[in-house]
Image (cartoon, rainbow, N blue to C red; front, top):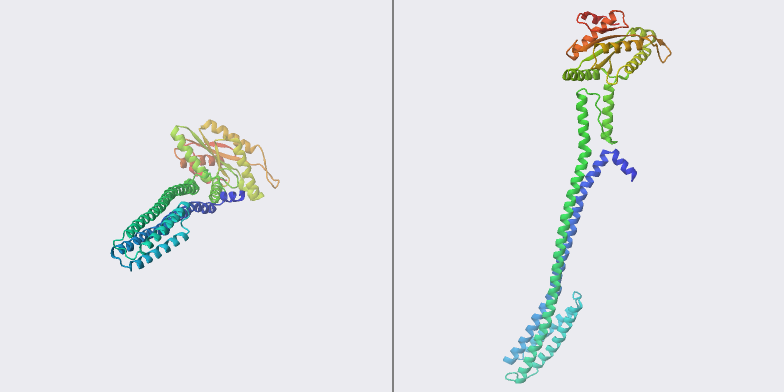
Length: 435
């Protein structure tokens, strides 16, 4: 179970499959519930129909035969036709057969029904005997005895009919109970279907909502990240605490952004991130009326180090200088590699005097301590620093960089290992004197 839960956390495909299964499960339950409900209702109605066919119809047929049994006897008394006895015997035979069948039927399971059938049969046997004695009179026309026997026969037929009516009412009562039971089943099944449908709908909505959140929210986070990265904000990170495919994609995007945000060699901010941060800081300084100073720091004679000791030693020198710059500036200052052996330091809310003090401290930190490379070479590295401030020296990002760059080249031109602040009279031709 733990392994399965772990797989759910780490697999979007499995979550989507499971979510779809959960969404389909209520439909399956609803279909099964509908089928069972229909079967229950159909079964209940079939039971009612069977009761009407198997129990009620035989009773009605016997009632008809009982009433028909009196007709031949009456006609015999009125007409004296002996052939009426043949019709009487036929009705008696049919009635006996129906009673025999109803006695053998298994559908009359209730004790009260069985007693009423026995009582009706007993009364019928008495009526049959009385009726047979009517046909024993040779000359029934005008015979008082025939009249008394007919009267007794009618009374006995009435008794049989009364017993059968009670049986009929009992069967009708059973049918009414079954109708009521069928109605209760129908209402119960209808309510059950409504509950199942509501549950299925709620489950589907919840599963769909959770599934959509599992997909839509990460997609929005990734879209936001891609948009921010596209705008050049490489400091942005997609926050997705997940271990599935979305989490892996977010991790990949963050890794890519980190590579774009930081210089892979020195670990300070990259040039693109420097541009973005300088633009934001300049906009903030302009909005709130603050000052800002930019330092351009360049390693002196790094080409000589590369040519003499190799580029590996030159890379060691760049990394060492970068670490000293980070150590000497404030936490909210930004150090970036501007290109080659050149670094840039953004110092928000810092004017000329404060920036000059920091710049001198940076220059001294590099010059006063030799750098030992991984190969054991000891390098005496110095840096030249150019400075320019906003809004005193420039009003835009490009102008501020250009002003600081001119100051840097002036530092180079004046002998290196020094700090030069931008002055309006600096010659743009100094751009060609980098070394």
